[in-house]
Amino acid sequence: MNNQELREILIKELGIGGLPEEAQDEIVSKLSEIILKSLTVAIFEKLPDNARAEFEQIGAKGDHALIQEFLERNIPDLHALMEEEVKKTLQNFAANEEKKNG
Image 1 (spheres, rainbow, N blue to C red):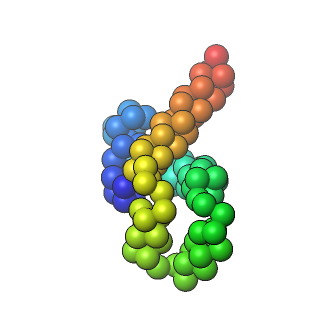
Image 2: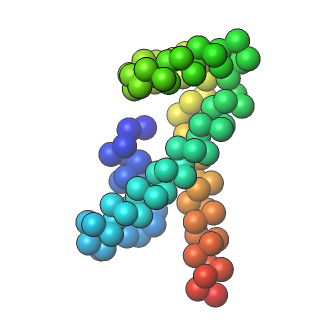
């Protein structure tokens, strides 16, 4: 799942397609940050101990293609994990919105 796919999913799921693009960008940016943090924790929990140091080294290089390749090699259900983290974040966001409005 790349950034554009994530953006499209968030806009669709949140029903914010009618908002100005600037507002969409702000919401998507904030949620993407939360998803990334949540996903990083989930990835670390799934990574075998012997792969964690290698992941930190690869992550420090900032090479997204290399990171993606490493994760796909070490976490067989990576795509499902990503989808789950997006879903959880959206559910939490919806629950928080209901509390605020409610």
